[in-house]
Amino acid sequence: MTVLDNKRVQECIPHRYPFLFVDKTISLDVEKKQIVCVKNVTINEPFFQGHFPGEPVMPGVIIVEALAQAGGVLVYELGARGLFALSSVRSAKFRRLVRPGDVLHLEVEAAHWSKRGGRLLGKAKVEGELAAEAEILLAFLPS
Figure 1: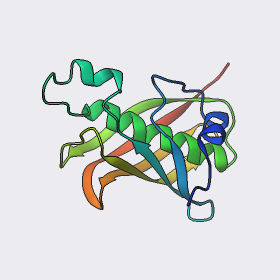
Figure 2: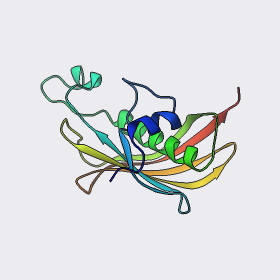
Figure 3: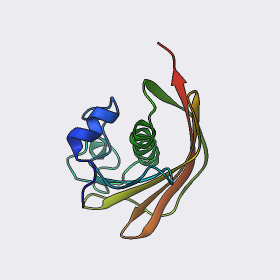
């Protein structure tokens, strides 16, 4: 089930191809401050050309970026407006490889949120198996 399609996701965050890593949102609970987004990982991703030839693996930094983007969709749906930037990544752990053909489920919870930024807890899973997790801090960028 799609809660927010790709067009709606692009209304929430400024990222665009080839740096948009959220395809859709399948679960959104504003009251609990939780979201689940999906990234369909395909061999056509530009980073697979060099990471690694003959053994394509999604880079961990891209997985963390995908979690941050899912968090961006969440905070937009919580009412935040403006541009937010990744300010810190804590306790990032990578548990399994993510490869072409995988469907990455990005589960993010806003542990703390204010108009200045906040702390997100994210887990990336493939077929229910934990691939990566991180604590992500976002900061508001004044214009």
